[in-house]
Image (cartoon, rainbow, N blue to C red; front, side, top):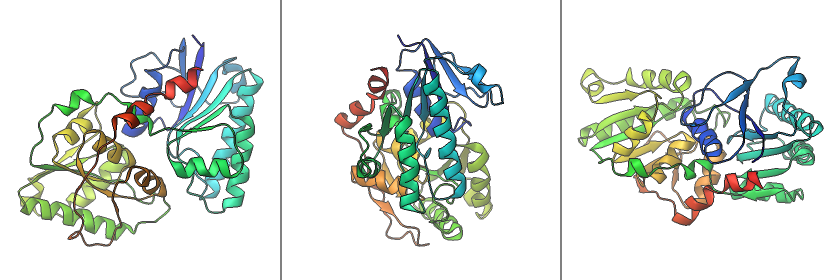
Length: 336
């Protein structure tokens, strides 16, 4: 048994990230688990976690000979100046952990988007010098690492594909559509026009209400998604609002709501992943290349935002048993 794992990621009550943390922590065999940063207990994690606080005394609080894992999807973006600063910060963490005799991992990431490819690759090369293993979730990222000659990368399906979904598969589906929304310029820097996106979501709601569906608006991260859901609902009539339910992120209620749905409209990346795990018909939108690149690997249809929903049909989505089993091997790669 290895002694310590230090986790660095977006630990902010986000369903997708919490599931990623849980799939790693629950399936590895470290003696102690630490999160670097805010003292927030992630959902779905069934082991005790401790916290390493920010501050100047960080080198004194760091753990010797620990594995340090940056876990998450959009953890090495390069489209804004702040992203470059964050990559340099991760490089410094890797250096500190190396000096303390530890190993370094980037786990479950998609690379990009980036503004300047050459500058971005130079930063990735700096990380590569300090890293023990990259484990990336799409072929685009794997190809980019191979392009500059990294010998430390492995491509696996998304971590959340290893989540134990079986208990939710027996939940009967209803005549309901679950809709995942998010701030569409969050990671993609405005690839989707907000007004057109809101217009389309409203059209989906109205169209499916006419077709006899109830609507579940699911929030993956309440601080971001709930205000967007509220704004959309305000544009409905009183009669339409009566058929719309908001599902905040509390425990597994979002997953249960998705399991009950007949159709899922997915904007959040991990809504797409959970929808496919639940074997649902989906209408998938890509607010960032991370969605499009991953969807391409699995042959999922991704729709552009145009303001028109008439030709946007829900498409069957499902992962193969082989891909799901492959997603369960992250812990094996880390424990080697």
